[in-house]
Image 1: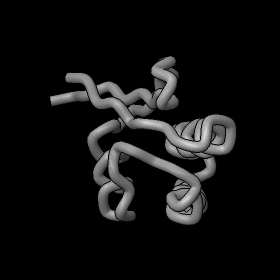
Image 2 (image 1 turned 60 degrees about the vertical axis):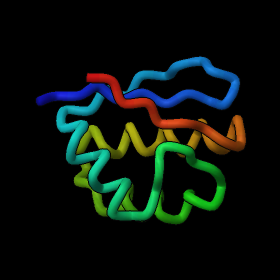
Image 3 (image 1 turned 45 degrees about the vertical axis):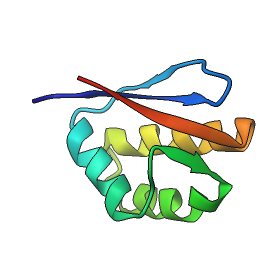
Length: 82
């Protein structure tokens, strides 16, 4: 089953993430201890995921988007829709 992922600030504006393997991406976040709600405390783990992603990986762009969202809004929520 394929899923689509997006993040939104607590203010509830959705920002879609274009990821080819959303389930694997979500699993990587979970393994890094990141839940659906993210804040500045999660930035080191997100940067670690980004560093481990391949150069051409769509994960890098997705993680950059999550990082930018946290830096801009302070707290975001990852939404998963099937």
